[in-house]
Amino acid sequence: MKESERIRLREVLRPIRGDLKAFRRQFREVLRSGIFVVDQVAAHLVRSRGKGLRPALTLLSARASGAQGPLPERTLVAALVVEMLHTATLVHDDVVDRADERRGRPTLNLVYNNKVAVLFGDFMLARSLQGMLAQRKLEVLDLFSDCAIRLSRGELVEAISARKLDMDKAGYFQMVGDKTASLISAACQMGPLSLDRGEAFTEPLAKYGELVGVAYQIRDDLLDLGDGSKRIGKPIGLDLGQAKVTLPLLHALEQLGTTQRAHVLRALRRSKKRDKRGKRTDLREVRAMIEEHGGIDYAREIAHEYSGRAREVLEALPRSEYRDRLAQFARFAATRDR
Image 1: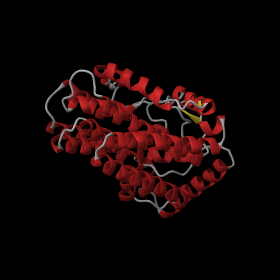
Image 2: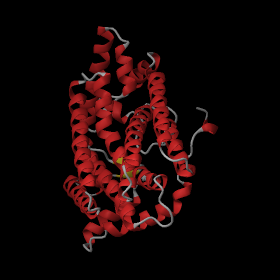
Image 3: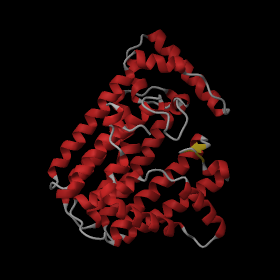
Image 4: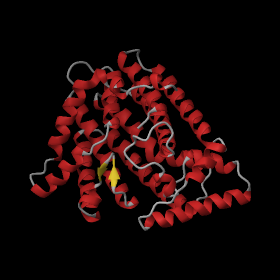
């Protein structure tokens, strides 16, 4: 897709600017604990927040489900639940990955230490649980208990696969569905759930979120290889250097003979060992191999395929500007440059 044809996130979210303002005010308020040290940590987190895509999807899904006028408190809290759960997982991920930068800013574990970061992640999880209970709906607890299991399973599978480097494509899509798509799907379902809409809205939005989540993660794999932009908030090749399994890498490895494959896997294992010692390995040769054997083109194609399927699922919803914006977001997920 040409630069001029890229979907701009600000355009996708334009119809819910007022909703997002209300959400951000509430997010800052919820993070206030009255304890100076905790509030300092929270302030750092607020300053380094990302695009807020998941709560934005909750708000868009609520509007696409027929919400009129100012959104009810329950819908804003639903968006908060999603954001706090996501933030908690990122804080914990940064500790596990020993990351010192996220979105161009130092991570909590770097500014403070691992203990503070883990405990603050736990604080966010507790706040998220509080928001779930405030919905007073068993469906919400069912949704997020399943989501939490899938998130944990996906992260565990990714960590183990980075050690063994033995995952296949079926395993990759299962992992991505768990660690990325599950929360995006939950975010989309929380919009109609907070409004007491029925399965006519929650089911298509659940499917949409799963498909968009996979497209989003595949695009993340491509951005890690420098495909499209260097403005992604983390160093290029970070996932590759940590031997994380990505779709472009998997596809390229499938095209190699036994000797070549073993050579690449040895290079990735060496890189991971150096990464643990805080050193970076030049993996340009591996990156070139991935491109040469069609890994990048293949992953782009699959991301677009999932994006297209997500747009098709939306046809089950009533036609509206907000449904159109969700369709635009599906395109954005597969083509974003950050």
